[in-house]
Image 1 (cartoon, rainbow, N blue to C red):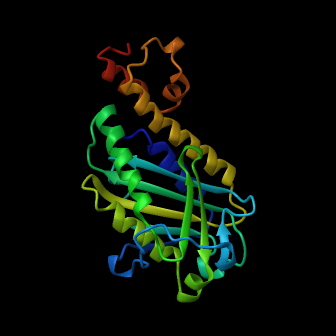
Image 2: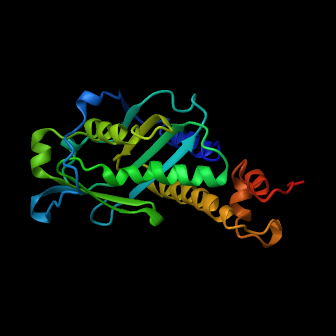
Image 3: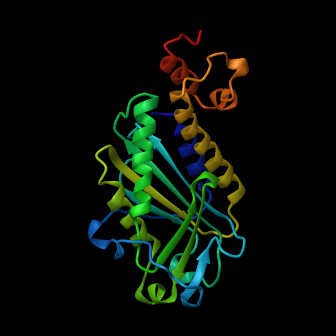
Length: 240
């Protein structure tokens, strides 16, 4: 599963000139999880990540190349939660190193199962609202959580803890972006392309035509190395 590799590398290049804090995963330091999505009222909120029309992007990439995701980590580019004073731009990217999860059918189902785990992560005082098809995730953070010391490091650890319950997951890198001057438009476009890759895996299962000139997936096949070969392997034909 190397279809997403170029987007993992592009994200690292985007952050190359920025100051990035990195923390190795420590399961003992996860932020408390309340077990269900906590309602944080507007009057209780310190700020919203992605609020007031600010960018709010979220997407996940997968690879079987263990060298790309060497260990479980949380990265932060921009102010941490204790230094944000108002609604802020926000992105959360998650990169997974996974076991060999097979061809299109097995891979799509495995990816969906791994990604679905995010809906079972409920950090205390950290209410998420996600629109997966638009690769958008907005977060409302309570004043009480800020006062108690919530941080991206500990929230990220909570995500990693949940993701690693899946036996296909080797390592996880959770990246939070809050730096105001980052190119969030580029991050959003990357998220859309990643979403197209995942949806393409689903479409391949439906038995799409193997005439490239008439196929709606041609653009993504042209751009993503390995997608065309996967398509034709699934159909039992030779891409020529």
